Image 1 (cartoon, rainbow, N blue to C red):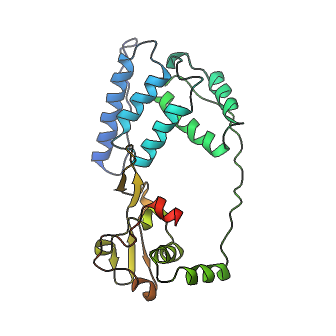
Image 2 (image 1 turned 30 degrees about the horizontal axis):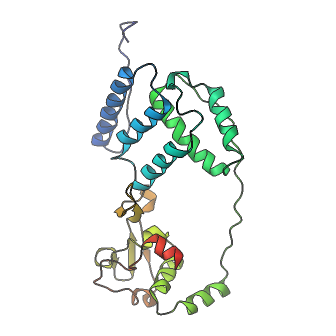
Image 3 (image 1 turned 90 degrees about the vertical axis):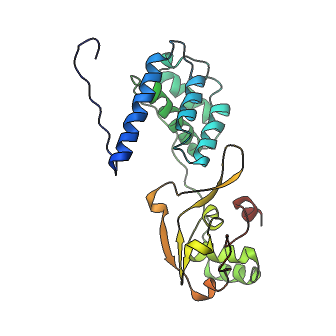
Length: 245
């Protein structure tokens, strides 16, 4: 601390020493950029730098989402200097968003905004009221409906995707990333990646966002028989194509 002459320590905890060191170096890099940032450093510029600095450690989907938010969600405040943004300004922004988008979308945008402000205006302690989440009205497929669906798609690539989704269970992005050559052993399928779009809208294969995303599931032999054993992909579709089908 240049004012007191005392050392200030910040610790980083991770699963491995290498990961902890990476977090520490990243913090040092961010701190240097913050210290050098001009007084009129705008929120728009802060978001741009935040995304660029995090690009290599964010999932492609998250990076694309952040870029979309940066370009579309903060029109009323993006020209403000980060140092001038207050709790009240953020609350007014939240209030402006409420009639336009869902509570979940506001939560996602606020989470991104708070991460940027935490990086470039660490003295600001946000205490904002967010709209309450609404319970989704999700239809759970009945056994009878599933029988109809399985019969209607029998013998098709869509049918294989439906069966994988029902028995693993798995998301569209995970189903489209299954590689029979490496991910199937006997009657077991390992889910260890997903197909997503990057910032150029190209489809790429990435690791799951969390450790819980890795799992191995035993499948009925009748389902395993339907999967081409030496193929690179169990289902030759993108998640969008699968959704449309």
